[in-house]
Length: 181
Image (cartoon, rainbow, N blue to C red; front, top):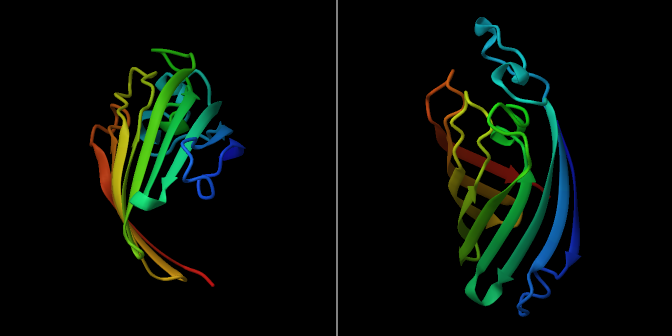
């Protein structure tokens, strides 16, 4: 479970796009882990059994967003103070570390046409657990907007290995179709 609050401090990504200053916001996310599944045969049902210090945690972040309309470009950079293992899926802190670490997250999107956008995201993560060779996440995406009521997004995400108990590299395709009126 994740509950978050984000507050814009200064700037406006759309209306101030011709100014040098980006939109800057701060946020906090409280995360609660309700246990893990899939490792019951090994007797593992809680993240603390994998070496996590806590099942629950809080992330703090500062995000800067800049829209460059003349270049059809959206840029975002975030610095997140976190102890989260696999974004909280494997708890918080661990046998290799239990302090907050500042981690960088960046994303960019380019509007190819009025109906087509391409982008990428990259997110660093801490390495707190001995049983988890945690790596950065990254993805690439394409979004198509055939009308103002329909969007189609396709992406390919690479999530890295998630615990030594599941050494298969987590990666895959994503497809979303959304509609609304």
